[in-house]
Image 1 (cartoon, rainbow, N blue to C red):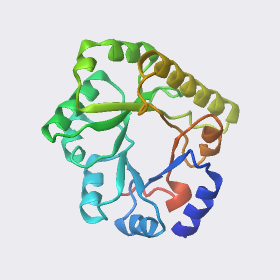
Image 2: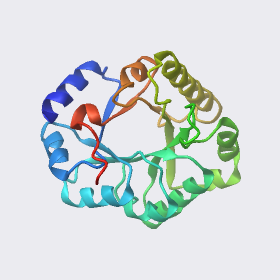
Image 3: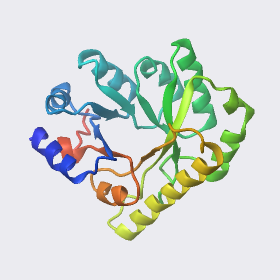
Image 4: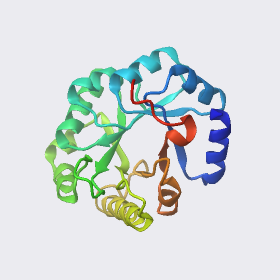
Length: 223
């Protein structure tokens, strides 16, 4: 079933869009099935779960951290993480940079923006982003690369609202690209869209979509 689901989703994505299979709460056997079907990029939102899965699954998997990252958990994922989608504060970015330095790595990161109506979602606003990117502290960080932006739309059936929020994230990306990253080719990623809204995200410029339940079935909340 997982293999068929992946095939269906890939058929809907242009070549310019990368599929992140959101495997949080799913057993290793499900991830292995997706891997055997050709999937190499997996997204997790708990650092310890990601570390444990990384230890037992094939080493050519690219692990994307997509959840709210606590500073005391950074050390568990820095040795191997490919991309952190969820940098939502200057303090978190500094902590990632510090840990990456210990491992002599440069870690790719996305700035997470709050684009939804719900107050419960994490993310920067534009003022905070400018403050961060203009800061001397940021200019000294040698062990992180900012590669783009991430956002989560409001959980709603109102497609117009979701589209508006994705458009807003694309505008944020364009603004930051022009002001801070015009000469940096690695600043190219827009991570937006999940199982229910990724087709809209693709239309609005997503380069990374985070799809879980449409691949693996409903999330297991008992894990």
